[in-house]
Length: 145
Image (tube, rainbow, N blue to C red; front, side, top):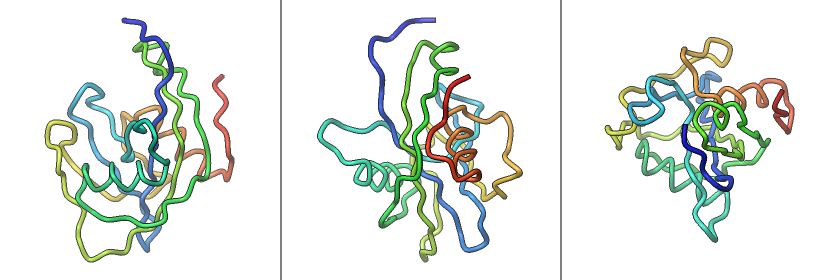
């Protein structure tokens, strides 16, 4: 395990459809074989909303508008396992667009699916699970144990 100096800030976006399902992706990169919501690292000078809009377009080819912040998660377990400490800004957007989400970065994601929020696929990425737990429980902050 390599220790990385500093903390990386990212956004995780819960994308729901009209049926209340969440869009999930199965990772194929360094965090394979985990399932996760979509998102990524915030660039210097970038707002959380702009990051969410950019990352979703890059990863699954859809345009989202007005993603809203609902929580924050300090992902300490991933740090303990991998040496990478991330803090996630948890966001939500409902997507009712005409364009179907599709994998745009096959080197990072191998499949997509809509799931009920209480039937998450396993194995599941820590930051994603924390965000979904916050959203379901209407909490703002995930406190590491």
